[in-house]
Image (cartoon, rainbow, N blue to C red):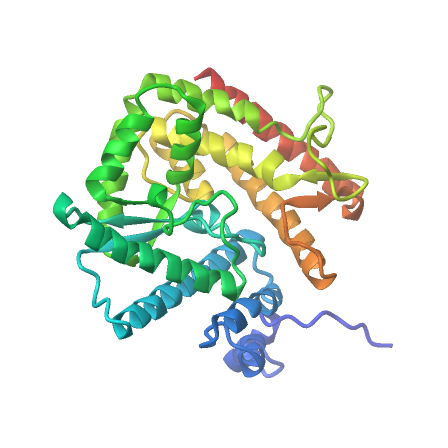
Length: 375
């Protein structure tokens, strides 16, 4: 009787004759591209291919955090394609080329390269400065661009943001100097709404246009916010609005105000990942760090500041990795059963050891959040 082992592309590198078989390693990806394409001219078909792409990547034993980076890379490509198509359409309709430099940025998880299988649109437009006398002409052009590319993304399967955080709206489409003034206004005191709006903007990544506009704005924002004590105090206070999924005894528990879709469930995105992401973001603002991804932020906080020890950083990165894995597994399950790929995790699907590790990870995050609030 022969034992059957799970085929692995990595194990196929060394063949029976003792030579390297590179073709066997690339076989899963070749098979994927033979049947579908992430770069299909139809953006809806390209987006639909993401689930199959994830399944292919899992055959390489890639961790969820690495897969999320690749998903985010693909989302950035979808943005660029939709923007290029919108510009072509506008030129054909007589709008001409962009009248001044611009930069489209993604916000949130896509900007942190932490997207999974249920993204929506969060984006903004930075427009190079121009005279006020040309506002109607130039802003009209970029309003049309914002409406067109966000509509294309929506039709492809990445839905419009329900909170209207998109370049099609004036709130998220401004000249560079206007953005700088906006952040100065937002950071002048500790109004909750202003801090929430700024938090949205603190994770941004340029996907099209002139990236120097985003770099210039990022430098100005880091300098402005780090010297605004009232704003920083409110930013820390807002961590209370993202309670970690633990009860007062340190056990896993869903927040009573959340309507769980399963009998035993937690919103792992809101009650686990977001508290960690938000606390790491706050510390990086305080220390004027430019890192965007959560893993990179935690690493930088240990290496370049005294905010975290290396042991704390390693524990929190490991917790982040494991929670992304749990969420990706749940989203894959949901997709295959025709359900929404959201932030909820069904605790009944977890083994006892997974629950124990999840409780430990949540405890580390809660301790980290409390530490950040005291700083």
